[in-house]
Length: 405
Image 1 (cartoon, one colour):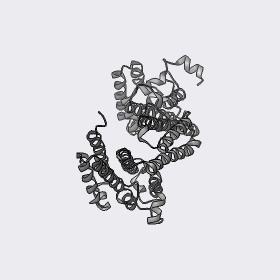
Image 2 (image 1 turned 90 degrees about the horizontal axis):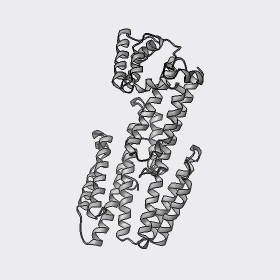
Image 3 (image 1 turned 135 degrees about the horizontal axis):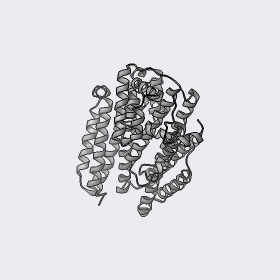
Image 4 (image 1 turned 120 degrees about the vertical axis):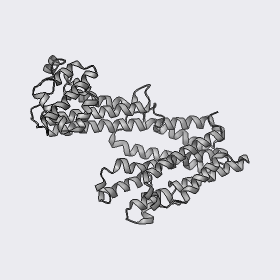
């Protein structure tokens, strides 16, 4: 069907014309399920779609079979019949082009919360998958076209995620936002910093602002991430190498280790929910590669190899990242440093705050753990509890030292 024909028929006819015939597992059930979706369309104020689904043509038989064979597609259509109704106005190709453009624009929507942006992104992805599946099953789309559509969607999602995490000024956790706040805070406390620290922070801000001025191409992403790590390391080196061990230094290091512990815990938790698609892969070469990815993401690959050689073990890696006090990104190491910096504040101010006892309690709890016990309880449950306690400690420090006054 040409674009001109589609535009002429838009609003009057459904623009997906199935050429393939599918047979439902249960014809009576399939008709009943299609009637339920028609009722959902009526409830959503879509009388055009409701009337169409009540018909008896080839398109209705196709949809009834699809929804009987695929509970996933059926549930999507029942929850969001608008995805079917739009095909009175757009072809699948036209609607997918709109979705890809909307996904690319999602990170820079103004006046929208992060949660709302993530929800919108999920809805767009679900609609795209729904339409791609319908086109493939209908026989309208060849396999090569389906692959291209999925590739386009995946590319748009990756670019949106990269922009959101690196460049989005509305995202308070983006690299651009963090670097700007760090530079603003450093300028405010300029007289309390050494020249080396200020110059490192200011140089990082100028370098990264320039790098992130435009969208980051996929080919350039490794170099951009390497530059971010390098600039961060220079600030950290200037801080530890030139600052007096006073309250300013201790507060800066408290922020470092609270954030580092949180990051390590979350990255480790990701393994169980994103990287491993099936229980059947546990212990396989796929599983091992994924665990190595975890090590590299926290700059732990070389250190782990020094200790354990080529042996890749989920138990050993989790133990290394949680309990090994020699590794500077492990949870145990971070809490050892937190106690040291809180001790510096106690000595400086001659007063012990409630957050100090909270940190001591959390550190003692970590010290009593062994990795077998953690896995018996459940790694996810343990990490979830740790993240909550770590956030509670950060809030307690903010209250004790009046950060929000």
